[in-house]
Image (cartoon, rainbow over all chains, first blue to last red):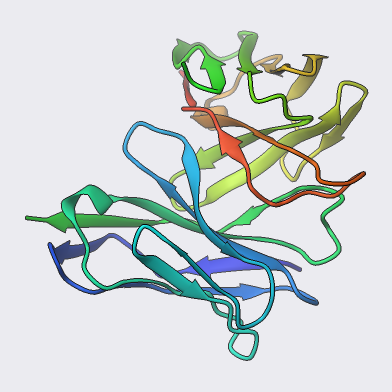
Amino acid sequence: GNSVTQMEGPVTLSEEAFLTINCTYTATGYPSLFWYVQYPGEGLQLLLKATKADDKGSNKGFEATYRKETTSFHLEKGSVQVSDSAVYFCALTPYGSSNTGKLIFGQGTTLQVKP
Amino acid sequence: DADVTQTPRNRITKTGKRIMLECSQTKGHDRMYWYRQDPGLGLRLIYYSFDVKDINKGEISDGYSVSRQAQAKFSLSLESAIPNQTALYFCATSQSIAPRANTGELFFGEGSRLTVL
């Protein structure tokens, strides 16, 4: 079946540190991959996405590259800020499942950035 | 004002009570979804609706029912609430780009926190 696995959190970093949040997936074919972010007290919002192998999604200094060979979509940022403190969710839409519009989410990784 | 509005934002109830969570959207999207979020489990899909007459079960629909009263409104009901339905519930919307196709981007409400004692 289709699934998404994220690294365990929480992740605690100092401001300006480099961030990596690992995400691997299991799916048939070529799923679309997403990172969503949930700030405290808010709903989720799309951070970035990639729809085919080797695509790089980027937004607000965050990047993730769709790696078909390693079935991964790791999230990176070169210099985190306190305002990046949030919960980050990796997700996929299974290939050929656009008829459902269904997203499969990982369990979420909490990031805390300290000044 | 938020594009996707959920009411109530917080609710505490007792086992066996009927609860309705409501969602309305001003985005004009055709698709609407109900997810629940539990710590360590991410988000799981309860029900989704392509339009007013097309409602589908998600992966954890047991114990829940939904109603799509209009394109902009999608409500979730717990007929007889139980403690393991204590969770954070999210409504989301998306716009299809072709018949039964989807961009994958969902727009979420701020969530409804339900506690069942």
